[in-house]
Image (cartoon, rainbow, N blue to C red; front, side, top):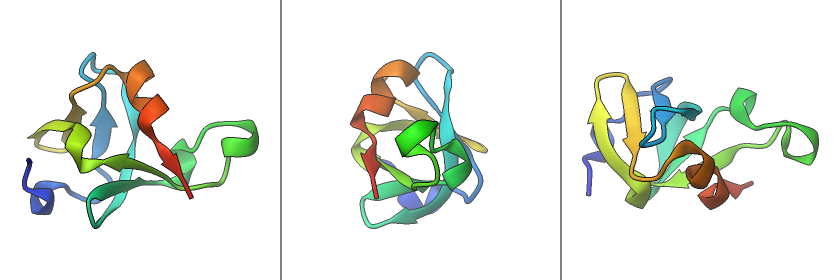
Length: 80
C-alpha cells in the first residue's frame, strides 16, 4: 500500500498506460476523490468520482500512477 500522505491535491491520476484518469481533489479514507471537472459527460457530469487507494501503483512527484490502464481504471470508479 502506498503512503496516502504523499498524494498531493491537484496531482494528476494516470493509468498504467499513462492515460489521464482524473485530478486529485483530496484523499478521503481509503479512496482518492477526483475533482468534478474530470467527472465525464451526461449523467456523470458534475459528480465526484472516487478511486480506491488499492489501485495506486506508485506516486511519481505530481502524478499518481494506477496499476490498471486508464480505460480499465475508470470502470472501477465510484460515483457520489
